[in-house]
Length: 474
Image (cartoon, rainbow, N blue to C red):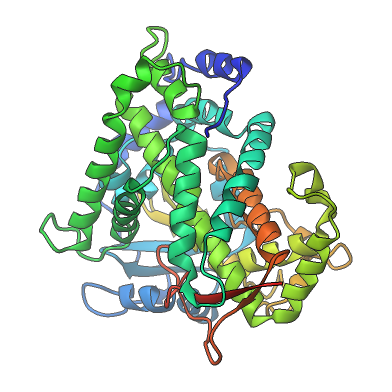
């Protein structure tokens, strides 16, 4: 089973094929020259020094949100911290988020901001800026148009229901592991028209290596180190995709991967095979890893707050259909509130990485050119000026009556914002709600007595214990 890309969608992809600017973008030229410029001193920016050499790395690894809270209370909304081999300036208010994410003056580079993981993600959409980013994004957006999302929803109802029914009942199992495998299989089916079978476990292993490498402290190409494992993981993932190229070129499949491959061979297109492979690795990575994080935190909080589990079950059970369609999403206000509150408390990414091209001033501080400037999503989501009792888990803050999230459009950014806002935001919502629909309408969820929710926060929130879960048929 795979996504049927309509002839109109395929035509749109082809028409989007001129994916490189016809003229060189001056902002891109300035940015790449800047990357070779030495950094200026940040001594005038407040912040904690941390340990020699490694700075605050261990504090951030241990509990990034708690670290951001402490630094915000000590230094205010603008502070610096050294971690993972470099010093960054963190910005923790909505005006800074608006400045950097809207990026009207083209002063903040995503490519340079994420340069530390360029060895893993190569030419993926995350590492592109300005006109270069815009034209690549236009192509990739074809995978998330409304008619295609409706097709995904139809398939996800079948795939997720079947996957849930295969999970052990009455016996406790590690939910995170079962979920991650199921979501990777779904992503491969939807975007590639591929059935993974036994290959799924090996692909998952290499995606985990890629994920761990993004926050590795020592980035040496030596066996045994997380960075080396991640690099080898990406080599395997790209090799797996490359092995399918020849058969796809001669096939009549119209899934998104095959369509992109054929586009790369179009003489009117400048999209290369390497770029197709890199985009697909990142697409598969985001489509299952970030959603695994979100669903794990949702299920953890449903077990910690069982009255909300019953509330959502009742709302979902009032729907008379056997499947959940996109059209019914507007009829799930309580599910929306819970979903959004989990994303507020545990955003998939705790910072958005950028690097400024030119010097600028903010909050009374001069920020030199070529400074790593990070939007502090974790602090925005827990800022006392924007949220009442921000450390409390309170889904009703998203109700129509309270609507705390509507004070400013840049206070709630679980999927980022601006031109680089997550492409798969709607896909993540669809997959999450469809899974909850089939899971909660049919099963009671329980974690072991005495278990406490403890999460790692880097590179994204995940339960430290794999989330042991028991599901019992209703």
